[in-house]
Length: 93
Ligand SMILES: [Zn+2]
Image 1 (cartoon, protein in one colour):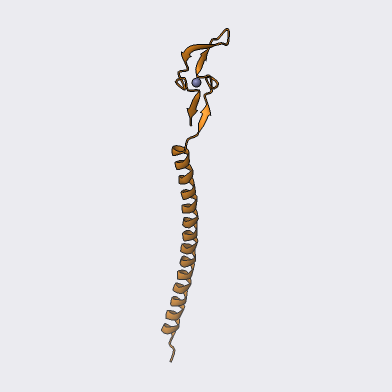
Image 2: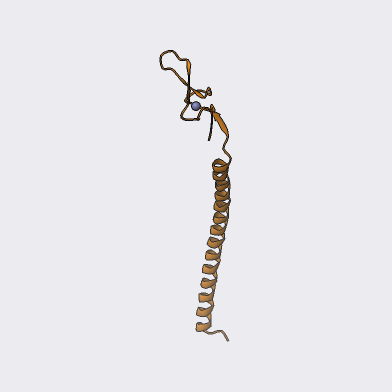
């Protein structure tokens, strides 16, 4: 025999089950978001490491690769070394 109390208890359990399903869906959505963000973070960290440790040579912008110092009036290269690239004509960055 089903009593009113039993019916109320079943309704309460059905509501609890529905709440559980909604929370479970929300948690699964959050887990998907977290996994996506971890992948983005990993890719970003790889780019940062690449930029930090894998520098490439560039022509010195101050002496234009000559390694010397241009005279401001004549434009001729003087015997002094460029202070930025130390006379090498190349900077790393
Ligand atoms: Zn230079």
